[in-house]
Length: 128
Image (cartoon, rainbow, N blue to C red; front, side, top):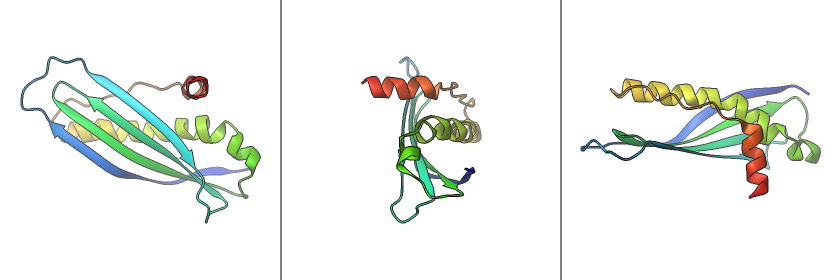
């Protein structure tokens, strides 16, 4: 089975500069999910929502990444680790670079998001 990242889109960006330098701690929150479009039997998507609170700005990004397979998606595939672990791990570096470039091109120090252990994240999600 061949799997390929077909495309990705940022669906929403909310970037708000703070007028007063905040003394609050910086924070980073990441949510992921996956979906299987009913009208496309060989495609699935991974969604990300990222919220960053920085001293200088607040940033929210919602993006989706579409993957295609060379065969129809089975129930076994849907329940496998690929949609919840491997696909997010493939997609995340693109979003990480996007956010770094967005903050840099907006006149701020580039934000370098941390590496994410998607195996641990999936396990934590199952346990909760």
